[in-house]
Amino acid sequence: MEPPESSNKDGHGYESAEKIILRWDSTTSEEARERMIFETDRQEADLYLQAVDEIQRSLSNASISSSSNNAADEQSKVDTTIQIAMARLEDEFRNILITHTSALETDSLVDPMSSSTSTPSLHELEEDDSLSSHGNSSNHLLQLQHCESSDSSSYRSTSSIREVDLMPAEAISDLQAIAMRMISSGYLRECIQVYGSVRKYAVDSSFRKLGIEKLSIGDIQRLEWEALESKIRRWIRAAKVCVRILFASEKKLCEQIFECVGTDIDDACFMETVKGPAIQLFNFAEAISISRRSPEKLFKILDLHDALMDLLPDIEAVFNSKSSDSIRVQAAEILSRLAEAVRGILSEFENAVLREPSRVPVPGGTIHPLTRYVMNYISLISDYKQTLIELIMSKPSTGSRYSGDPSTPDMEFAELEGKTPLALHLIWIIVILQFNLDGKSKHYRDASLAHLFIMNNVHYIVQKVKGSPELREMIGDDYLRKLTGKFRQAATSYQRAAWVRVLYCLRDEGLHVSGGFSSGVSKSALRERFKTFNALFEEVHRTQATWLIPDAQLREELRISMSEKLIPAYRSFLGRFRSHIESGKHPENYIKYSVEDLETAVLDFFEGNPVSQHLRRRSQ
Image 1 (cartoon, one colour):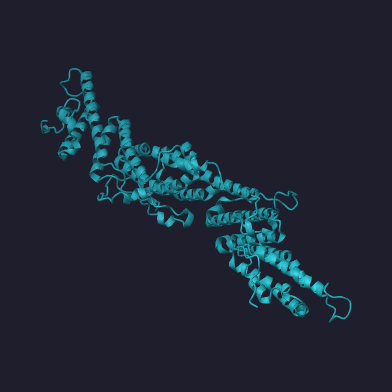
Image 2 (image 1 turned 30 degrees about the horizontal axis):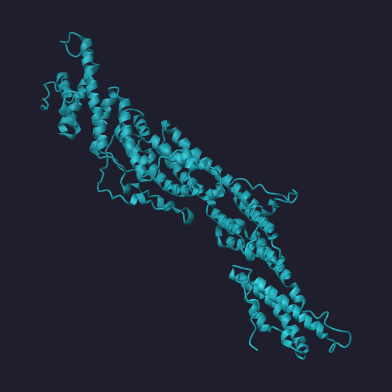
């Protein structure tokens, strides 16, 4: 290829400009096809741009030169030259974009706000392993200089947005120079298409690094919930990076290149680049928001809602133009649907607790799996108190003592004046849980075991409420005292049902015959009374050792309460009547146990373990 000729005396004559344009026509020159102007000497690129400027000026003149005989032919010639120049500039534009385009480096894909917005336990975000496999960036990108605009950086006032420089300043300057000439020659559409196709590829590459998959709404809804849970965690992390870093940086790049070229061109290029990826990103959240509602989804949907709520100001800042209305509207509508899903799921959960159908009694009267599930569930609900107080705005649909519906418990709101709708829902869940447990207790054949079952479960409810400051605050101490009273009443009812027959054996009635009191004890009745007591106590001991009170303190309290009734009564009975038995034959057949034997036996109760057929007796 010949070196460029020096400009003539006028500097930029049409003929010189035409030669430069034609010399770089890749359709006629193999060397022009193999080399890129903006990758050669800087002077070569400047000369080419000057040549384009000269041709463009020629288009606006009435005639090319005074010697022209056929203005139409000359006009056609200039049009052809412009077309050749624009084709070349389009190739150069694409090449500069491709040369300086890559997915954001790993260190750029870390949202600085993530650590401050992470939440503990269930909704703590997982580390994205796909990111740790990439090396740190070795490039220190230059701070770009671009034309000033009175409002060009207004959206960057959102403190969580963190732009990164996507291209070096020199490349941006070249792209801006090319874009100005293409657009002024009527090649705006081609410019936008080239820019969008190359930059969208870069955005797609960053999406892959972030683990964002190309899934349709249908694909997402067909996934099992367990698989979706991990995808939700990853999406939350990725969405923060996409909005606050990736999309914001793409917007900045568009402004740097196109802001001085013409009104709204920078926004058109931005939307050409990110609209598809943004829709792909938000389609995931949309699919979750319209999926089938079930209780296990509540907390991940709340995580998704909180993340999107946190991102909404950034979305509105980055997508702040009229052409990006659809993105802002989609995000706001998804947020609204997620809120509605939360309300619907809470209602579904309440109905599921009320209607939970299991009828097989849990062995030993221990805590029912439903109780554990429900109380763990509402403890987690209390962790989302701030969000749910805003989302739950109506009271639960409850029964009334006047409704006469036996399938629904009663709850009067007048007794719970001043509580938030969320607190009323939590109390209502506990009410319907107790209602369900009362129904399940009726499946025990032994009334004392039914009372023990209620005691265990209501005590567990009380302990879970006390163990969560947020839950306790919402439930309130007044209702907590009511619950405490219920499990203590169940404990009293258990003791009455379980021990009344045993203690009845230790009364004096029925042991005396007519005559003097001191000598009027019927030995046969007394022997029978001791035999009955032994049999009943052995049966209670054998049975109730297999019953279970999981809470050690409650277990010990009930044993002490039992002992306080049993041991003094037995000691007194033994003291009054031992001599009558020991004066007869085989007293060991009737007085089988000492007071100490009973005290030891009580320690076997409520451990959930079978014991020997015979009580352990102290050494004689």
